[in-house]
Image (cartoon, rainbow, N blue to C red):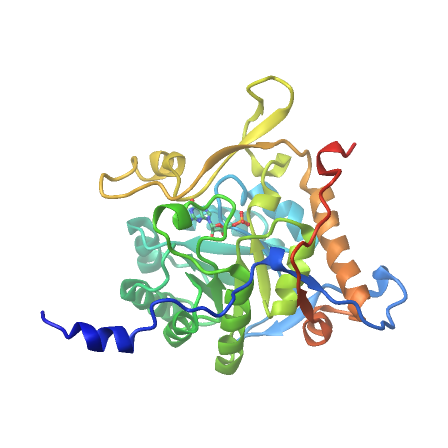
Length: 357
Ligand code: 5GP
């Protein structure tokens, strides 16, 4: 193939110089508020989706990671009306939905593009799950779009989550394929090495703002996936336009994760194993090892053991209620419509960060 280099240089903008933002670049601005107490804030939303289904609950979901999204996690989070995107695999969802039909609305069946997921879609006889999440690292592949169409046809009334992408083009393609919710985030996850290995990604907050705008115009929503470090990041994500916020790292290290509790190397603390789904560890456990044409794009870490997840959930939900009260929001739709953010140079004063008792 031949092409004229001069023409190419004029046509393609190689670098977008417009500043793009992460959660750590902004703070939410307080405003006059009629909220008297955080207990007056409701975090439960009722949402109608393009597929025609409705769902009510708290729009926070766990990432479909093996070291996070277990049945035990789903049982704990369902008490708060939060969603657990179960680790991948049809049978893992079916066992839960059969044992706890009354809690099925708080879990998602999660599939990928692997042979087992394709077989499950071809052969399963289950009625439409409340949520179906089809998750791949690169949501721009045409093969993925075709699979989403197939899943849409198989379960027409399921709330279909598809991703990941980070641009308006990505949202449009997944909407066309039938997604109700597009999962947004590439490279922002705590276990992610994609930015280091492939040099690919997009600052999470800007990705959410831009993709949410496109999604709203198409009558769908977005799930912001990855990059939550502090409880306040959930609030920033809702102000930016997320319909749901998904997180992995903040839910790791708890009893409900199901992993083994270990002593750290220097025996000073208790830890749990946590690994990314594209890590060498995950590839060895689920894919027969890392293929010779691939690099590991995920970390394997020991996270501090944190006991039961209930305390963490209270911090997250308490933080969200607090954010709402600061901007005069009685609920999450109010938080989105009333919330504004300011770009800052420093979000948190860290002088005593390592001295907390
Ligand atoms: P976190 O909340 O921990 O910052 O991000 C969770 C998200 O990170 C997951 O939902 C998923 O999209 C992404 N993720 C999980 N494991 C891996 C991995 O091994 N590699 C990459 N690139 N992303 C991962």
